[in-house]
Image 1 (cartoon, rainbow, N blue to C red):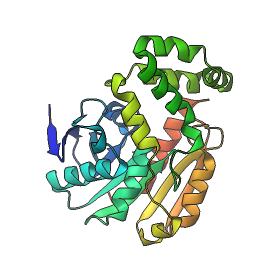
Image 2: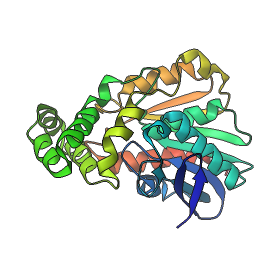
Image 3: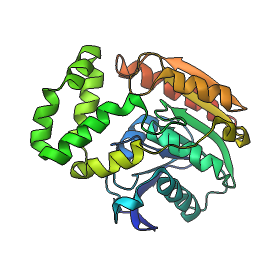
Length: 266
C-alpha cells in the first residue's frame, strides 16, 4: 500500500496508467475510489489519486492537523514525491477547493486546473454544507449507529429525500465511509475553513481553468461556479444536469469535457 509520510500524516495514493499526469482530489467524506471511478475513462492519462488525511486509508495525528492548508501541503508533497515536471490538477467538491489552494502556491509545472462541483468559495461554514455538519454532530453525540437512525428521522434528511434519491443516498453514504467515526473533527475543521479569503487573489492564477457545475445541486451551488468563473482570468464554466438527478449523464458529459480540455496538453 503506497503511503506518503507528510507533516503529521500518512497519505495513501495510487499512481496508475501511462501518459500525461493528472492529480485528482476527491470530495469531503470520499476517497480515492471517487476520483478513480470518475476519471477512469480518460485516454492517455497517468491517473494519480489519493485520500485526503482523515479520509479513506490516510491518517492524521491530531485535530490541529486537519485544515485546507494541510491538505494542500499533502498534495504539494505528493507532486514532489512523484517528481511531476508537468501535470494538471482536478478536484471534486472539497478537492476543487484544495486544487485552488495548490494553484495559488504556484507549483512548477502546473498546466491546467479542473474544478468539478465546487462546494466552497471565500466563506467559512457555507450554508450549503449545513447538512454535513448535522451528520457530524449526530455521530459525535450518539455514536455511528444511533446517529444513522436519528438522521433518517431528521428534517434535513426528509428535505434531501424530497429533493432526490441521489442527494439522500449521498448523505447517507457518510455513515458508511472509512473512518466514519472521525467525521466530527474532520468535517468541522474543513467546513469551517475556506480555500481563499478574497476573490481578488484568484487573479494570480494564469492557467486555463475548467469549471463544471449544476443548477439543481444543493451541496454544490451553481453560483459558486459562476463566481469563480468571473474571478479567474482564463476560465470556462459548463452547466450540466445535476448528478443527483442523472449521475450517468453528468459523469459521461463531464468526462467528455475534461478529455477535450486536456487534449492539447496530453
